[in-house]
Length: 169
Image (cartoon, rainbow, N blue to C red; front, side, top):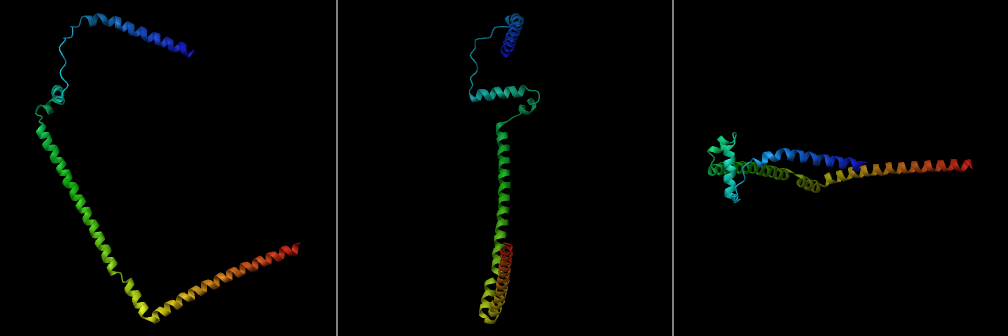
């Protein structure tokens, strides 16, 4: 069924093309014959001239291309590129200055840090060191005692459960 529909569409399309060709053949026969001159060369300069002539004949671009100069175009293009590179250089210089300032601040903060000096003072004063060690030992002992209490209470709970289970049987 699909093949039949496609065949009908193909035959109808070919018939339509034939009708259009039959109507246009008399008009085509009245056209002048094409000259047998060789085509213009396709060198880059010929293409540029062809494009320039086409652009000049266009109504919107004709005025713009009337006084067009490649040298002025290149001058403007290069000056814009130069301005962009100068802006880029300025921004990278500012960013580099910020990075250097941040690094300097880090170095100053590290220099103002008296951690090692404070540690040396604590070590030199044995009393301060003994007090800190004693406080740390007390905290450690308290933690060990708490852990042992938790373990012992858990062990007692297990024993109670076992006793209940054995009493049941």
